[in-house]
Image 1 (cartoon, one colour):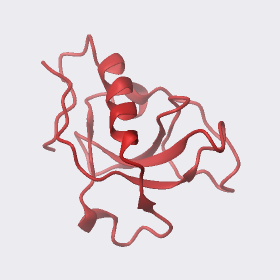
Image 2 (image 1 turned 135 degrees about the vertical axis):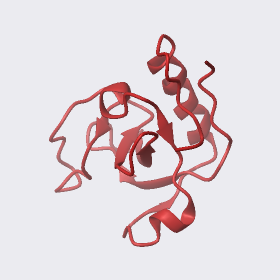
Image 3 (image 1 turned 180 degrees about the vertical axis):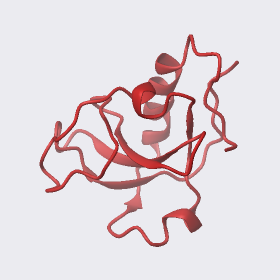
Image 4 (image 1 turned 90 degrees about the vertical axis):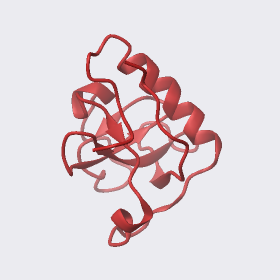
Length: 115
């Protein structure tokens, strides 16, 4: 299967604690559950929880460890109650797709846009 996602707005929760100034934490959702997580397109680290404090790297995970069956881009309605999210830069989508294609290249259940 192809690891394709439809281009959509991405939402970010500030700088990644591992690479501040270079990477932002994207707000994503697992495709097999209503579980949200954060992912840095620069260093490739995935966070099951929002880092607290924001500059603390309290876990190190690969994208396919946190979302083994793929990812979904949350819709604006899904993030309405999440404080501190901003629209990510347009180039974040290409950076995300680079990681998605590598993380799920051999997976039988490739990421999809649908839950």
